[in-house]
Length: 199
Image (cartoon, rainbow, N blue to C red; front, side, top):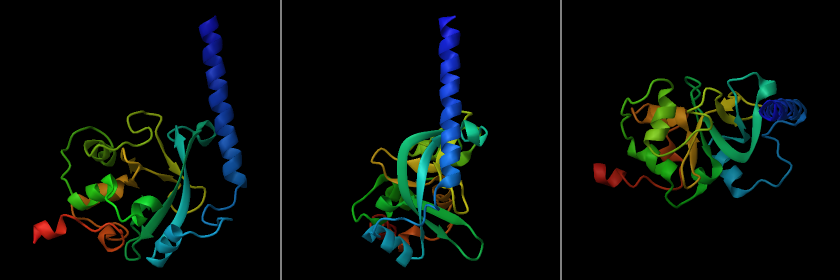
């Protein structure tokens, strides 16, 4: 009896959390319109052809939206779109703007081939292969970084232990020399350390 009450309580919390997130998503202004002063990271993103998006970490995105569980994480991303084919790549503003090495930038530059392990989403397995993690990647409930405006409502992002963050699909495609959105080597402030070795 006590277990049944506990389970019912947990289900009610998840339902209420999903409803609260849904209500917030419907009433908030688009995330690209920020009330605060534009900082150097945002200015750099837009100056290099990107679009700033503030995204929220959410668990359970494979369920109906009212059952999504909003998490504590909030991250500003820069989205680059390639006009010719509409392909996109996203990365956190911190990852884009820092002049120091990050695990996300190093993973992008290294172009490590996918080992083919795993059945399901190859971008998620590739992220894991490189030492990163996605929200809900190993769970049927799913998860991701949500924006209430823009093209990609839910973004699968690979977050590394140093908190550097990059679009999982963009990273996966680049491992096979396919550029989505923009060649990040032209905009990342941390230069490719492998370029000199390849010459």
